[in-house]
Image 1 (cartoon, rainbow, N blue to C red):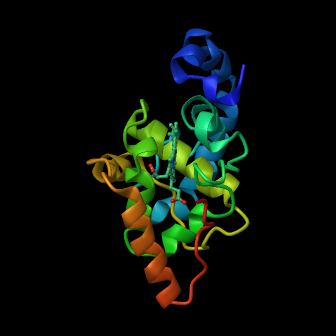
Image 2 (cartoon, rainbow, N blue to C red; image 1 turned 120 degrees about the vertical axis):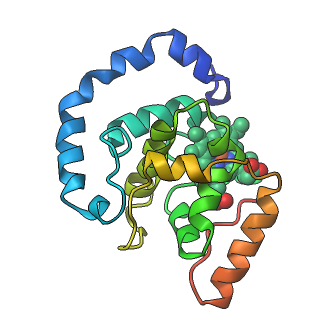
Length: 176
Ligand code: HEC
């Protein structure tokens, strides 16, 4: 079975999700940590939105088929996410772009599940380059940002990169 053939529906049907809920203790420990930290500055992110283990599981189910399990993407076709996506946060609307690209916007994930996946992408896959001002996505924010789906993500990405260059900030990795 290739990575591309791992469809969310197949993985769900196999009970992957149910079997992977065991990390409840880690979930509460991490939520407690976050509520005392940077999440406090805006709306508090829910336990589910800041559970990186759950975020990773949903990433595996809904994003990995295209973006690769480690976020390497597929150069020429799919952008990498590891140690690159966080650069987009440095442009106004970059945070919104990340929630509105089709893969995020129309994922079959609830708002707090999607917030959890985006937080996993930032706090884990991008931890080396994460801006210190990063605040975890919350379900409320994702609900506000994720729709409508971007109909021309490539154009928005080009505009974000133009802004980053003009402001001497590092750009995300080119993938095509
Ligand atoms: C069917 C393949 C596919 C799936 C599944 C997918 N993506 Fe993507 N993703 C893409 C492509 C292609 C792009 C480039 C923009 C576009 O054309 O949509 C992209 C772009 C992105 C970007 C912007 C990266 C950049 O550097 O511009 C982010 C963030 C992202 N996806 C997150 C996700 C998340 C989170 C999920 C799972 C919930 C997901 N994607 C699922 C194909 C996919």
